[in-house]
Length: 106
Image: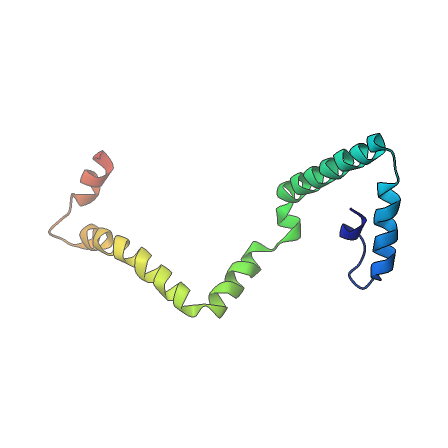
């Protein structure tokens, strides 16, 4: 349990001493520490979910991802464009002046 909170550069001896100290606690205390750790992790996870906008700038993540993966952006536009092409064609074509009324009635 201590190993999870000790920096990676800490010596293995310090971690071993911490684990030995925890094992030396009464069973009830060990159980209480396990429950406290679970509550802490659950609370931290809940807080991160509720405040994700403060932790991650989604716009930066998305733009950065699309810049790195240009083909993904091209595929996205092509897929979205296929479904919209016929709709825009029919909406703008003079042969189908009432097409938008048909779509709205569906």
